[in-house]
Length: 198
Ligand code: GRF
Image 1 (cartoon, protein in one colour):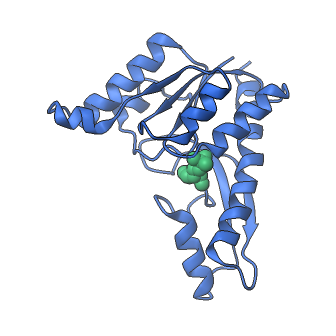
Image 2: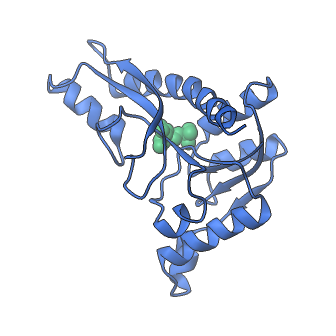
Image 3: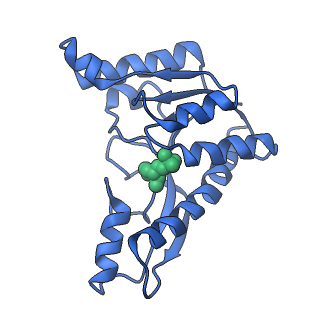
């Protein structure tokens, strides 16, 4: 099974997928890593694992007078024509994908989001969970992997895990606890989805 991973940043979740593949626990092979940021450290992680990379940046499209839909359509086309993957994994991908992308690869896209279903959709979910915890309005948050549909972070959950907020936590304590759970849950979710495709 072929997997394409999309990243925008450090790629610690990509690294968890690479490590799981090395252990024979991913259920598939990562054949391409895509980033919308040239500086994403995850690109270095891919190269060090001999995985091909592809960078496509929105600012190039804007400079050429093209739209987000053009960007999304071209990216989906590139992924499909060069890889025809079984699964596309958004792992710290910070670009809202339009139907131009989702429809082309429909049913094969999953996303990692550091919150529980129906809570804290959208960006900065960890920060917002922490603020609510500090205000006494939240005692736990969580992580989910879900199918991607046009509504941001609203697709059917595949796997979720609660993460407790602890008395005295600083933001980085909660971030560390959440990322540790992400690194565990994402490879398991990828493996489960690929198994369900057999
Ligand atoms: C993760 O918390 C992910 O859930 C969120 O952005 C972060 C990306 O981390 N979307 P990394 O790039 O995988 O280290």
